[in-house]
Structure formats: structure tokens, C-alpha cells
Length: 161
Image (cartoon, rainbow, N blue to C red; front, side, top):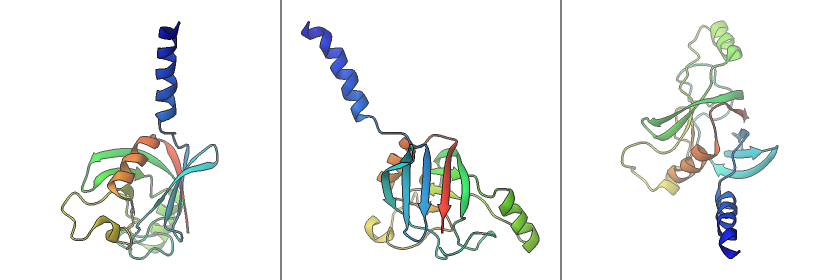
């Protein structure tokens, strides 16, 4: 009888150790936090770095701002200039119209990513305290591994001021 319980124990252990999957991601720019949610409840939070101009919505390429609004995490990129990257579906139709009216390029390539794929000049703990991206959302490489595993393609993300 005890041999029959061993597979059940292994199954329960693997379920308990499995990371939960996020069905929604929220970024609060003012808090510099990224939250992974499941069924409306946050289960993990991360400190983030943004662009050097974190206030306000991104409306043109090169403005160093992180967009605000509702988007989708639409693809993952394992080989990039950074340690893993998950693409945010910026620009959406609203962003494109805003840029068109202003006569500028809306830009793109906004991602959640880890640190650059080159040696760092300062310790990770120091880098993560400043806004250093071009408008992306950056976390440490270890945190990027967690987010990478917890988020599937197609997960919605809302970026709040």
C-alpha cells in the first residue's frame, strides 16, 4: 500500500513547487513596481527600473518614457541585447493616432527585460535603483527568470502612471 502513495506524493510535491501563472500584469510607474496577478490577486511584486523620464505617457520614439495603458505581452525574446525580454504590444491604435497628430514616430520595442548582455559597471543592486532604460521595464536577471516562467504569451498588461 505504501508504494501506491509514493506517486501521489510526487504529484502533490510537484504541484506545490510549480510557480503560479499570471493572468494579468500591472506596472505602477510611480511606485516603480511590477505585479503579477492571478484571479485579480497579486502573488508576486518586483521593483523596476524605467526610462529616465518616467512621468507621462510615451508618445514618440526617443522620449525615454514608458507607455501607459493596456497592452498585451505578445512575444518572448530569449536572445536580445538584454537578459531575456518579453515584448509589450506598444504602440496600440491610440498611440499611433497620438503620434500621427503630433507628426512624430510612436516608436516601439518596449519590453520587460533583465540587465544588458554585457559586463555591468556597477552592482545590480545599485543599477536597479536608477531609471536607466530607454522606456522599457527592467528587473534583475533572477527576477526576469521568474517573470519569464510565470507569464505566457497573450497575457494582458496594464501600465499605470
